[in-house]
Image 1 (cartoon, helix red, strand yellow):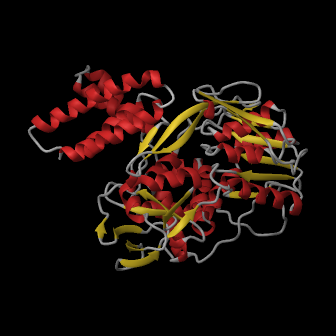
Image 2 (spheres, helix red, strand yellow):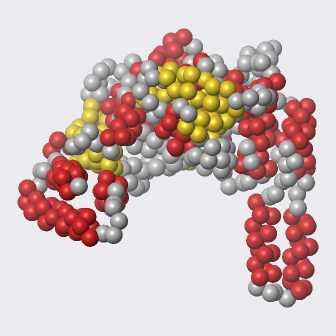
Image 3 (cartoon, helix red, strand yellow):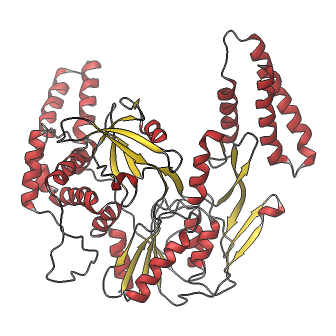
Length: 516
């Protein structure tokens, strides 16, 4: 027991020693505090009434310590080494499908990825995951089921599924593959001259994928002005941001500087190749989830007057992390430096201000939110997909062309069918206002307010009761767009949601106005 305890403490010692190695004057403080920790754990081991899980205790202690530093410095034990791979390469071993919590007891497949094992084995969105390799999934959370589905590429996983319209559960035996999700989930021409490129993360070799899409747009499709969409892009590798910046900036241009406590953490990053598109006009869309490497790319291009930024202020993550190996196959992702843009600004906690601010209004809530929250949009799409073998293609252009062709879109007849579906599901529409009002009325009774006040509140309650038929048709555009997105995803996978959303995207609309 004590030998195992000493092993754990040595691991903790080495974690701390690695971070302090450059400061020998501080090593006595490290030794003193580790001796305190060592003695506390030894005393607990000797005197505590029950047997303890020392691995869990030590991991908790490490996590609590690192949480005091910053949100990005984290300990990754050996059992989560797959996570390290995801950080740097974007790859993991699995079946290639998104799953979601359907209710408190069910986890369902929400989206298989096109061309990956789940889709190739005809796993469908809406399939309920009952078991994975004989382990029951009923009552489990999404993270627990995800752990079961992931594994080494080449291994077989047996998944027991239940599907609407199929009488009995069935089993799929799927060979896991190394999953690498596309970092350019969608690119297309919006009209005859403006190209659009969505970029999701800066992982290993993602700049190659960016370059491939860029070349196709410019060399084959006539792109004269490029819109890069970095909204929701949480960043990744600095090297990939540098590579992409190098497509547009002169060779030798300083893109970002990092400054840390150690000399090895302080570097100047410059473009190393001649640009392939030195004069292509650029517009970059950003929001408050654009972070880290996204901010390096958009911030440097803004500083160097190479791109116009439109949208919301970015997240403000100006810190650099490195992954350090520690004993027993663990890893430490540790903040080693801050980065500075060409103008000298560090955007940590501040973010990058766009040249043109367009705030997306997400404050308005209508019946669409209630339908989404109750999984009714998802369920209708599941039924629609079961009843329709195919749908028309999606139109990626925003200029009404090509003319005379048929593209997928829902109309009033589809809304009538959807309303019938809601009746079958016994849908009742409770507005957010009425939900909060119910609490107000309950408190009014509990606090024994006078009868006149309570009576007035009761009358107001009746006025807040909403007829979902009226709400459905009043907000038909929002409802139909949400349905189109959910349904199209069943046939055209992840890119479908982006294509549908761009039709009414206020940030993209403003970008197009500025370009033209």
